[in-house]
Image (cartoon, rainbow, N blue to C red):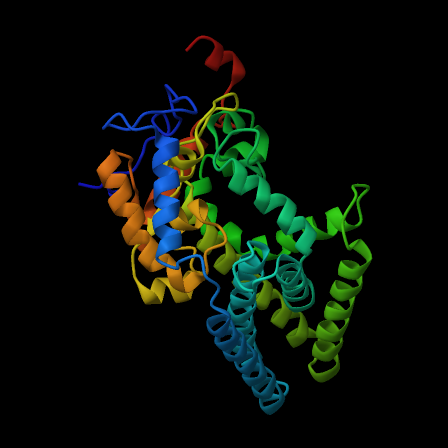
Length: 372
C-alpha cells in the first residue's frame, strides 16, 4: 500500500533523521539510482517526455480571450465599483499565465530551449510583470534541493518561518506573528503578489549579473506603464487604486495557495545531508488529488512528485506519469504522498503553527523564563 498524507507530519518528524546515502538500497535490495533510471526509461518509452504544443496553444488562446473579456467588461462597466470583480478575475488569469511561464522555464512547452526561454521571459515579464531571471534563479535552486535547509530558497525565513530554528530567533512583534503564522498564512498571502514583484525588481536593479537585464526592465516598465496608465486614464483614482490592490491580492493568494501545498509539512532535509535525487524529490513532495480540475486549477502543480522527477514533462502527461511513479514507489518501498486539497491546506496550517510555537513569547518576562 502506498503511504498517504492523511496523518499530519509533526515538526520533530519532519526533519529527516538518519539520512540515507547517495547509493541507498530499496527494500528489495536494488540500488535506488538504478531504479530511477528504469523509471525514466519507462516514462520515455511511453512518450511522456514529448512536447504538447497544441495543448499550450489552446491554453494561451483561452487566457487571451479571458483577458479580452476582462478588458471588454471594464469598458462596459465604466466608473463602477463592480470593476473590482474584474480585478479579481484578472488576478486569476495572470496566475494562469504565470503557470505557462513556469513550464516554459522548465523547457516543457516548446521543443527548443532558447525558444522556451523567450516565451517564458515574455510571459513572465510583459504579461505577469515579474523578472524571469529572478524566477529562474530562485526556482532552479529549489528544484535542485527541495526542503533542504540553507539550499532551498522556498524555506528561507521571510515573514513566515518554515523551520523551528528560524522561528526561535523571532522577537517582538514578529514573534507574536510567528506564533500564529499558520492561521495567518492565507491572509498574509494577500501581500505575496506585491512581495514577488518587489523581490524580482530587487534582483534586476541589484549588483548581481543578470542575463537580459535591460530586456526585462524594458518589458516590465512597458507592462506597468500600459497597465497603470490605462487604469488611471479610464477609472477614477480611488477605483483604479482599489483595482490594483484586489488584482495583486488575488494574484498573491492564488500563487501561494498553488505552491504551498506541494512541500510545506513534508520532511525537511538538514543542510549537510546527502540524499540521492530520486529519494530527495519524492520524499519532500506531496501530490494533490483531484484529477483534471486540480490540474487546471494548479497548472499541473498538483502532480508535484512527477514534476520534480521529470521537470520538463508537459502538463498533459503528468497524470499518466503518476501511475508509473506510484507503482514504482510501491514496488520499491518508497513513500509516495498524496492528499486532497483541504487535507493539504490543513497540513500546511498545522505545520506552520507548530513551527511558530518555537518563537519567543514577546510578553514573557526573561527573568521568569530563566527560572522555569
